[in-house]
Image (cartoon, rainbow, N blue to C red; front, side, top):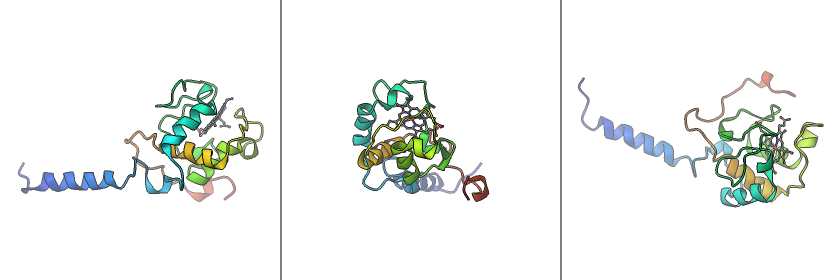
Length: 144
Ligand code: HEC
C-alpha cells in the first residue's frame, strides 16, 4: 500500500485537534457553567455519594445501592428519566425525589454550586470509546 507523504501526520493533527476540543476531556454540550471537576470530586466525598455509587477516581466510592457512575458522560439518560445534560443532571442531584418520587436516592440538601461541581466531575467520566451521548428521537423522551 502506498501512502501520500505526510498523510499520517495530517491524521495525527486531526486527532490532536479533536482531543483539544474536549476541555478536560469534556464535550461542549456537557460543559457545566461555573462547575469545577476538582471541587466536585471533594463534594462527592463530602456528601457521601460513594456510599451508594461506584465513582471512578473518588475515594471510597464503591457503593452498590445505586448504579455505578462509571462512564457517566456516555449515558443517554439520567436515572432513565431526563436527557443527560448539565441542567438535568444538577436537577437530579439536588432533587431526585421531585424528578422520580419514591426513588431510593434521597434528597441530600445539595446546593446548586455543589451540584454543578459534581456534575462537572461526572462528565469527566468517559470511556473514550463511545463518543458523546447518542442522539435519541424526541418521541422516546417522556414528556415530549
Ligand atoms: C442512599 C443511596 C444513594 C445516595 C447516598 C446517592 N445516590 Fe445517586 N442514586 C441512587 C439510586 C438508587 C439511583 C437510581 C435511581 C433511579 O434510577 O430511580 C441513583 C441514581 C443516580 C444518578 C443517575 C445514574 C444513572 O445511571 O442514570 C446519578 C447521576 C446519581 N445518582 C448521583 C448521585 C450523587 C452525585 C450523589 C451524592 C450527592 C448520590 N447520587 C447519592 C442512590 C443513591
